[in-house]
Image (cartoon, rainbow, N blue to C red; front, side, top):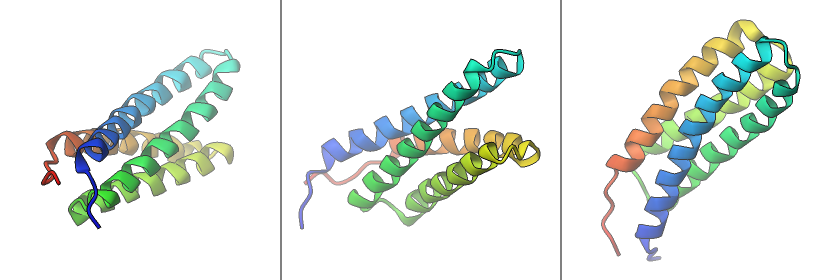
Length: 123
């Protein structure tokens, strides 16, 4: 099966950038929440779902592109960590929620960097 790869490369890159920006947004929203405005907690929750969606799209695009295994595994790890992060947030497990958020920022930088460094054979 031949797939035109150029559009999928842009999907991969867009998902990487979206993942990065929404993870950064999570830190901002959490910081605003701890200042006392409880409304930011709902925004933090919705944005967390967008983080998960971006990771899922990134993994799907990497699979369609038949990207190297390490790319798929890093994306899958980010997706699973995002799921754990959402669960910890709902359970109010802040002892792990905050450090995992820092780890996700590192994953966001990695996904974005890999997506722009990736060069596929165009078909």
